[in-house]
Amino acid sequence: MKKKKSINQKTTKEQVFFLGFSFLSIHGEKSTISSSWESVMISVIELWIFDVYLALGLSARNAIEAGFDGVEIHGANGYLIDQFLKDQINDRTDEYGGSLENRCRFALELIEAVSNEIGANRVGMRLSPYADCNESPDSNRDALGLYMANSLNKYNIIYLHVIEPRINGSTTINENETPHRLLPMIKAFKNTFIAAGGFSRRDGNKAIAENYADLISFGRLFLANPDLPRRFELDAPLNEYNRSTFYIPDPVVGYTDYPFLEVTP
Ligand SMILES: Cc1cc2nc3c(=O)[nH]c(=O)nc-3n(C[C@H](O)[C@H](O)[C@H](O)COP(=O)(O)O)c2cc1C
Image 1: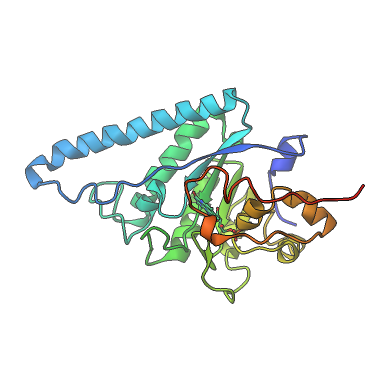
Image 2 (image 1 turned 180 degrees about the vertical axis):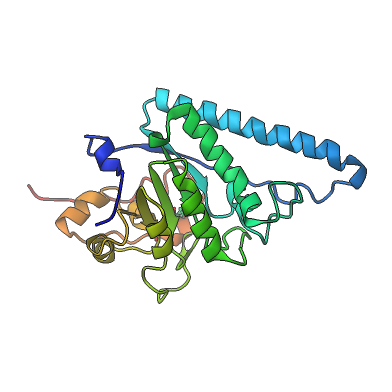
């Protein structure tokens, strides 16, 4: 058994609540800048980036004051941070683009800013180095994942939450993807590692038993089963998710209308 500072060692509570912070995109933000405006725009962009750090730090503090145990910085699935990380979408020419180190700078500075505000033991990060989701592929996914896992150690954040390569967004794209594909990242990261994507009760348990990851997260199964932990405990049948209601705007249909288990006392 490896390492680690784990979420369970940090709290005596059975449940912890982390608020996820994600950001929408800035597709093509630099592409229309003419050369005469370049230096002015770079200053504006630097200020904008600094502003994001301040805003996120403040939001994180508010989340803690509101009662959350921590925040998860969302660097996955083609959202803003992921657009900095991936070389097929980041076309910046400043210190936030180009080399692997430069592309990861925004994510790491953001992690540092939020950790300074609320403490690294209240900060987690989500990444999807292998996903092309929302047009955000990378030409060297292994190197990106490993660099981020190693770099995040410096900030001592409480967990790293990574999506398996067999998943793109909320779709399983390769059932036969090599198991344990995240192993290099898991070995590199020294605190709690959460693996996500395509897990069932059986192979989630197997992954934990084999010390692959520290925790497994569930997306589609949880959406369709509001009492998923209870069903797992009883090894009860699961509701099947309905993909056609995944992203509809209705606040109830497809979100809060899946039935709970009826258990006879
Ligand atoms: C309805 C729905 C909405 C989702 N929204 C997001 C999202 O906003 N950001 C994100 O990173 N992943 C999102 N996901 C992906 C899940 O977090 C998860 O990574 C994915 O479903 C794979 O895990 P699973 O196999 O356990 O479902 C969403 C999934 C579903 C089904």
